[in-house]
Image (cartoon, rainbow, N blue to C red; front, side):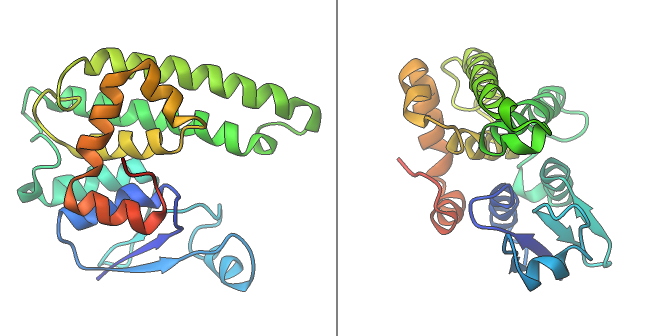
Length: 208
């Protein structure tokens, strides 16, 4: 059975939602930020990051976007990912990596500025720049979304769950919705899906 090493409110939320959407049986292990259980977890993932995913063959995956892509492809009946040859596939991968490499990291810079410089005096500037970056990156996404139901048009996919998780982490989610009303409707559309709503509530993420 699959084991998900998770922490409430962290990047494991999107993986939990995909596991629920795909109806995949799994164990969930909550990883604290400190203490003996966290130290033991370093034997699983030496970086100490969550999520990690122990597959049924006992191999380990890290990186939430990789897990989402893998699980969605492994369970095509979930229809969470366009097939390899589908015309929507390139954009699906584009936006998955866009959020993983840009928005996710900008959020981390805001909440954990000390990780990004050895100079404590730099933390204020790091946080300020992360807000600028998030404004830019959410604007790009909102413009691409337009009035479509999902980023792939009318096709719901795992990338929408990933996007919604990162919107939920924004330092000022209401400011995003005020600037981009289409993002409010989009976020509500994604997070009211039964599987997603259950995971969002369990992780303490905002529901509209």
